[in-house]
Length: 290
Length: 292
Image 1 (cartoon, each protein chain N blue to C red):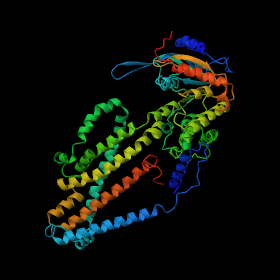
Image 2: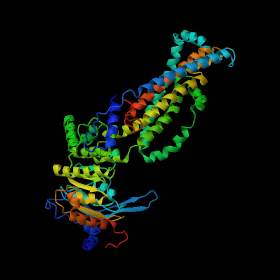
Image 3: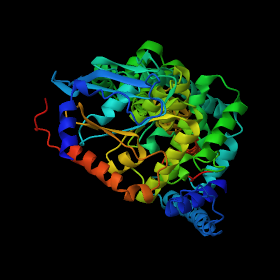
């Protein structure tokens, strides 16, 4: 355990770009996403510069599932928003499918934690799901078909004519996921997607995402503060350090392609992995890193 | 009926947090739970009107307000029957309503685009807030002498003062409306690369619409108040002028006919614009499922 930690510590900073995990099947392919020495600073109204991200680097392979964890206050969300092209890095570059990200990439979909605000209450479920499709020059029928397909893929039936606020929280988040799927992205970014739903719904949604990933072959990057969730779902866990954030450790999750809430979570490998990740997350901010 | 069924379904869905999507509940609200309330409300309103009419008659016959200054119900009714078919009556209404409508329309055309622009730009907001806060506290009545000096006692003068009174509530509501756009919603729109036109149509206008509808209701009522008030003060043609002139000439009953007419118009305007406001807010947490 301490071995892993030390090597992780040595890895922290710019040098930790870890590359593509050897466990991923598509080792030879070009990375889907490439984050290269990305830093991000904010300047407050009083002119104080706050450094949130300090030289973060990692790659994500096609069809890989990467979970990003870190102590609260680490710039997890900032990092995800930068990858999504919603904000530009202060320095460094992000590449998506080989192109530098200067705005939201077209083949990328985003799922937010706050489903009640990311779904428009004045639009029906169907309108919400087809909203991003307006960009794609599809016929109305084609849009409706994609919406119906996506809704049934997330386990929601014929609810297109309802409004988001008529559904439970878990169902609303399913709608947000359906919207992302209907958009047919190459990659899905999720920011604490299950933080606002109850525990049972949460594990249902975790399994739903794993099933959808298989079905659609998407690359998925999820930011979470739940270490069990990170290990359970991902092929690789990237542990961030506290502010200013850099990659502290990268943990490969070799649990195979088939995950099960009961079986996987009781495997000794799972327990060991979650302890590794937890220890890395908990390491105090002040601890020296090279 | 659909709304209440849906809200019942939503309650069931939230209650069970059913993750499987089979939320369509067959549960219907126990029918008849609303009817007695509505009936009682009607009875209350009728009672109130009867009470007011009795109070009117008592006030008129007791003579506490002096001789001939408050007409009895009978006199009021006969005067109304006499006045309503006359051309003067309808011209007065037309004069008031035309200046009201034109004034309100100009206010909307000015205030909403300007308010949306100010609301979406932090710099413009900082620049204009002190001015707007100052200007909106000025009662338009004190500008009457100036406006009369410039335009005389005309509909044009009235319209200018109506615009001055109505532009501020609309402007402020537009600013609040555009500021109410949720950052997460905005990010959702930009993450999916939704075009500017669709952002206005599906995000900015819907978010702002309840605010705009409230501003419109406030402006519609205040426009009428200003119109009639100015007609009384500046003797501009309209209902207010008739109220003032009849009163000055000791024609209390006739004055009351115009007064009640103005009140009824006010009620109708409030009703119509409250309805519009509710329609604009069908999705709003405060109104969900309340109207069909």
